[in-house]
Structure formats: structure tokens, C-alpha cells
Image 1 (cartoon, rainbow, N blue to C red):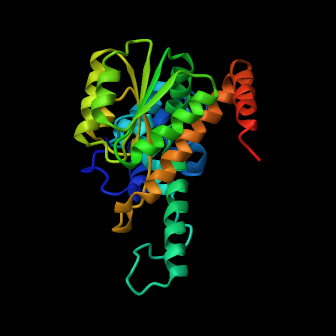
Image 2: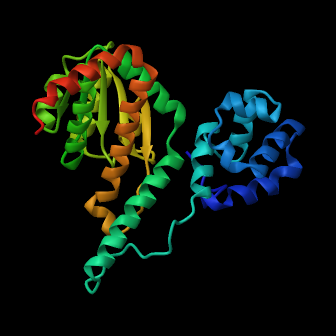
Image 3: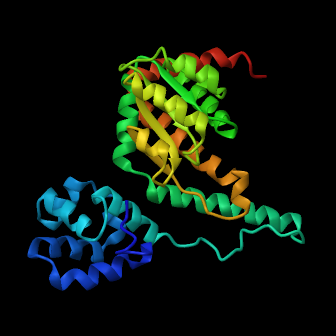
Length: 289
């Protein structure tokens, strides 16, 4: 996690890089130059691509990130992406009692749009790719979320079933715990939780971990008990405000990740899933007028 004693704000990343530039070794300076010249490109580069672009070793990229106070290159990229985020529109998302219906709608839409944009910036591309690989190979897939996150789990179940994958979604923690106790190392569980701190969620995650199940968490970017238990973290971002407590924007961010996983599975393994999708579509044809 970011060392806040070194950097108190994501916006200080660039000033910190510039301040340390004169004290860096020649290899680290090459990495710094790439970051300063085209930061928007850097957030999409893997560590191997970054090393090649800077003409240094991957170890140098890691060392550069750690010297700035980050856990590693991926942690550096996440905070760099946050530093690059720009508001889409100057609009106060706090809904006031005197707001007109149109103003309320504008604020709701702005919050959702900003959240989706921010989530795109902080998502870990490598983690998303690994999640797709794990789910494609899993013998069984369990999905779990409490409250509103349970609705997201059910939506993911419907998409995975269309691909012909074995998937079951739970919103009740007792049922989820029982089902999870039967899973093993060949299985995967997708846990959806914005806070990453719900007791029921953590209990199910602990059961899964004890059985060797691969845990994929769709959760907010933060160091939480859930993120520490998960094998793969798919980060979401959601503006912190009084309005955010309703969870509207976070659910849209979660849906974006679920859709990305579904589309990624279909594109990556089209030969395997194409027939299943066609059959599922055909099965539903008679239900439409």
C-alpha cells in the first residue's frame, strides 16, 4: 500500500518523481522519464512492457516504484491512474432537498459516469485476465454477495450460465457457507462486496480459502480484510459522498466488471463458448413475442 508519509496525495506522484530524479540511478531515471513523458500510456503497460519501453530490467521498474513509497509496480500504476483522473463535469453530486427532479437526475448520472470512468482507470488488467482464465478452467463457480451485491451475483450467474459454465449465486450467507464448504482447489468463487468488510462476506471467504478455492473479489480499491483474503482483486472506484451510501454508482461499477468478464470469456474462448451461447439464445427465442 502507498506509504502516505512519503506521498500524502496521488497528485504528488509527479512532483515526487521530479524531486527524486536527480538522486536516481541511470536506470531508474529512464523509468522516470517514461512516466513523466506519457503517464497515460504507462497505466496500460504491464511490467514487462514498461521495462522494454524504458530499456531496463523488470527489477528496476519494481525498485523505482518502491523507492517512491509504493508496494510495487502495480500499486504505483493504480495511484498513477488516480492522479490522472479528471472530473467529467463540475457538478456537485450532493443531492439537496431543494433540487429539482432534473437536477437530481443530473447528479445521479454524473456520479455513475464518473464512477465508471474511475473504475476503468484503476482496474488491474493483469488481474482481469487472470480472473477470466481461472473462471474458464474452474470446475464449479460460486458467486456471493450480501444485500444489493447479491443482485450483482445473480446477474453474473445468468451470464455464466449462458456460456455453459457451472455457476450458482447466493445472497444468503448461511447457504453460501454450506455450498462453499463443498468446493475445492478446482473451483472458484466470485465475492462481490463494495466495502470488503462485511462479516458474512469474510466468513464465506475464509471457508473458501481453507478449502483452497480460488477467490476473486470485486471490491473497492482499498486494503480491506476481503482484499487480503482474495487471490485476485478486481478493483472498483466510487465517489465518496453522502449520496454514495445508496450504492447506486458502486453497483454500476460492479456490473461493468461482470460484463467485462463475460465478454472476455467469450472472446478469449470463443471456440468453446460460441455453441453454448447459440443454444442459450435459441432456448429463449420462444419466450419472446
